[in-house]
Image (cartoon, rainbow, N blue to C red; front, side, top):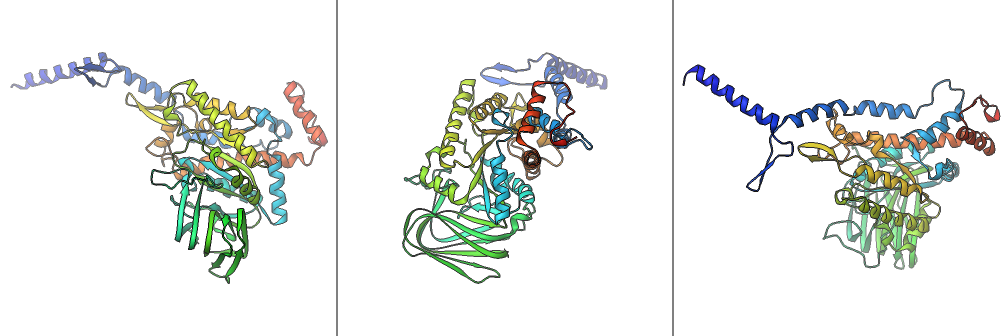
Amino acid sequence: MKPAQITIFLLAIFALLFGIWFAFPSKGVEVAGVHLRFPNYESYKKSLEDKRTEIDVDSVLLAVDKSYEMVKGSEDTLAYYYNYLTTNPNRIYMPGDDYHFLDSFFEEARKAHKNGTLVRILHYGDSQIEMDRISSVLRQDLQERFGGSGPGMVPMIQRIPIVSVSQKASGSLTRYAMVGDSLTNKASNHRYGPLTQFCTVSGNATFSFFKTNNRYSKQRAKEISKIGILLGYNSDDFTIKVKCDTLREQARTLKAKDGVTLVSMNLGKNVSKGTISFSGTADVYGILLDGGSGVTVDNAGLRGCAGFIFSSITPAVMKDSFAATDTRLILMQFGGNAIPGIYSKKAISAYAGRIVKQFDYFKKVAPKAKILFIGPSDMGKSVDGEIVSWPLLKEMNDSLKASCLNNGVAYWDTFNVMGGAGSMKRWVAHNPPYAGPDYIHFTNKGAEHIGNALARSFLLYDDFYDLRQQLSDKAVMDYMNMLSDSSGDQSALPGGEQ
């Protein structure tokens, strides 16, 4: 074939491909039962439009950070808080916009720090928080403010290692858990305890912990000077011995008891490793690895869980456990695992209804604790070759928020903090990646940003609580109501605050 003929042939092929590219249906065609797709002009044009509208993750996170900052030199402090509490999309949404909602927690945290005790936050969530992601960041930030240390309560057998402490268990142990595969033992009595799992000791067993070198572990989590064992239904003469690297052995022997017992031991100083030995029969609900005084955050990552399992746990065990550990705040981070099965607004409503039942349960078993729901993150899926947000995810987020606020539960909007619909795609593409290639889970670096954003919002409410202790409650309420009712003069502050 002559060069000119080859050139004409190639040009004809290119022209044919261009024609197909320009005219081929964007959704493809069916031929003999086979769905054929081809790159086309419509998809190219759409990709250009998407690039123009894609969020910039760094800009979003910078805006989140700035939204928590008070303008330097501001003369109108209360006006700043009013605007934050009522209009900032990154705030914690409070039922009825009641800025007193978390006051009881802030008050108890201060008392605990002063009295040498601890109040607990229990962070439940799906696989988004396993390995202590998000929880560890929140814990560190809150302990820097309120005091306290250690990684918190952990199960005796930790199936998925966490970044905050290394641990192992051995001996005559049987693990029971609500969440797991078909090989997971289920307890017919449903006495699972606050971590939704427990280990039955039948004879002799040990639990050992070690300071971790994981690069994502936080400094305060490594400072362990208090140990607690939350257990129940123990035999007579049930014995617990604790031996740490630099301390003499401590031992406790318990009388038989039906119900929950918390055995606490103050080690006096931080330890790097330790072993707890058990002898007898008991259900061990959790090992508390704490330190100092103030607050701690317990992580309960439940892979595959949609968040409506809790009401199946025997109430007596949960109620006694929350009372014994002084749990004052319950975080629930769910929704992601439900999304793939949501095909209609009716399904969204049904899911939200099941979540509300869990609120009712927690209010009964932990009456002193406030509840904060952390909404689902954006999630990506492939549609026609493009990564887009899951259908109805935005509607799910809005429905959960409304259900929480209508039922006395606070809400933090992860979806919109990330940047809204389509943001997960950009979090994955970020350098370094802030989310994994499954377009669902945050990386450790992404979890750092989410945890810090949540902590900053939480601590801003504490700042406002602290300010209000210096002013009369009536003066603050009158001023906030004035801002709500009028857009006029806001110069006169109560208590001489100018």
